[in-house]
Image (tube, rainbow, N blue to C red; front, side, top):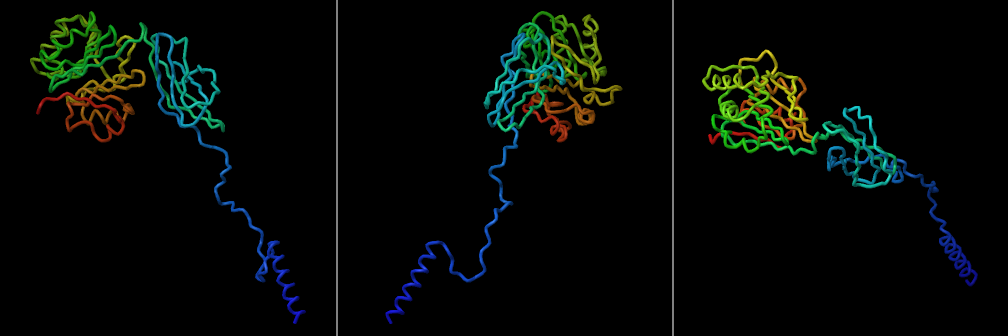
Length: 346
């Protein structure tokens, strides 16, 4: 009996030692060594995502300098490519400091020039990001302030472009609509007058301006109307002694160092006077304006087909907000941030 107890105690001691040593007493199949799961994400993989560039702007513009600013969503380097065309040609020194708020100064710029630029940033892992193309303007006489007056003339259009000592008037509403408002903003002669089309609610008020100011350049769409308003207006135009131009797609209208691109109409003109309206686009720095007269869906479709409408910031809505214009396709292409129209109470 004593021998049996000693034997049992010995077995218990052996089992205890085996457990302490981590040896299994399970008589099932031996376990194979574990293999790492190669399908699981490798958290040690290197960063392959480029920085996200946002808030690009050109600030502190003088006659010869500008400051380009932007932000990135992670620390990255700073560099700018710039020039007078989208070929650029000039590059700033690389600032290798890793930051999220970027600022690069450009110097030695030419007054009176429009500059294109892109910004570039590289993160610590070597991923590069390049922005879209942006523009800014260096003026010839210091930085002129651009002010655009959308004059309240009810059911009509009258838009004054005030650019330092240069002014352009696009349409004039009906008779008497502009005579009280415009004179205080015009310095000397009126450089440019544009009559988008011969409707009375666009040209009627231009007679007063022709009486008050010397007008240097008058742009017409070439259309006619058998109305007394149109006859009176053309008599004033012919007596003014201004340079008279017929606008068509591809023309450019200058105001100081600003350039307005004529997107419409095309020649020969059609039978619908609204569809023959002059349409102008102005790029000022990073802001694009579109002035549409009374153009409707047909003119919009023509400009879309020609690839002329893309990402407008401020839109002067066609034909006083009529249901016959501002089609879904046109608005999808223009994507205006601000839309403005002038209309009567009814």
